[in-house]
Image (cartoon, rainbow, N blue to C red; front, side):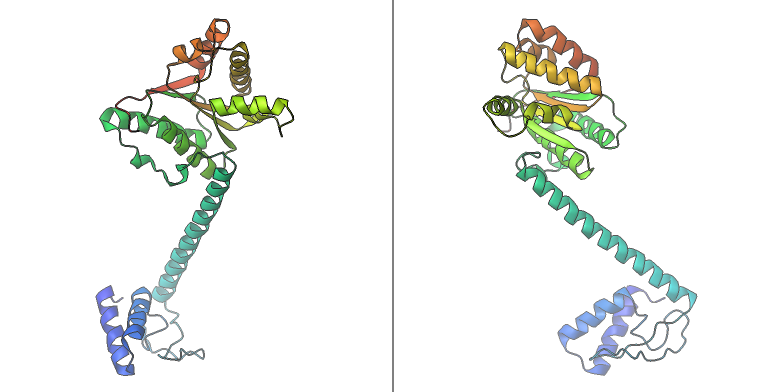
Length: 284
């Protein structure tokens, strides 16, 4: 079989024989680089003469592809490459639509659709933490991870970015994922008491993967503590995956809920969570 350079050389010679212009010549060169089965009069594999195709191109002659084994194999390979390319395009379109809908309904945080794991650069220690989160996410999407994930660290160290990346990968993995900010969830629950639509707490309980951002930010009242315990306990009992991000360690976040529920919440989180600590200076 001709290599790419010989195919290009033949295509330019053929274009010269036909008196083709520059743009048409380049189109013919690109076609020849891809495959010459219908462009050359003699098969480039077995050198057999081919017959003219009844479906002729208006500018250059075309021929019926040879039936030799090498040509058939090349066509099979090209068809497989074309199908794989089309599958990638369909997958990309499906993912883009799914991510767009997720952003519209609040399941995916702002800017998460464009975020990438390699874009979270926080030095050697930070990269190790990011890698741990990424591997956990892969196992979660594959339904092989049993532990929850608790990410904590100071403000501006990438917790919300990581939460968005987890949500993005889960959504692309066709998981029933829900992203909430802890304060926003509490607000939505209160709003539902006065006739708001739906039951935000029930929706959070039922999500296949629940991501709670800024856990522990609002605490101190008995109702907040009870809501946190009810949500965490319900999801633990049902074996539903949960991710929590916080400015506080598990112990400190639990204490912010008040003494009555602190130990119960802390015990459950310590028992079911993989803990990842982020550090470094704020990037905000």
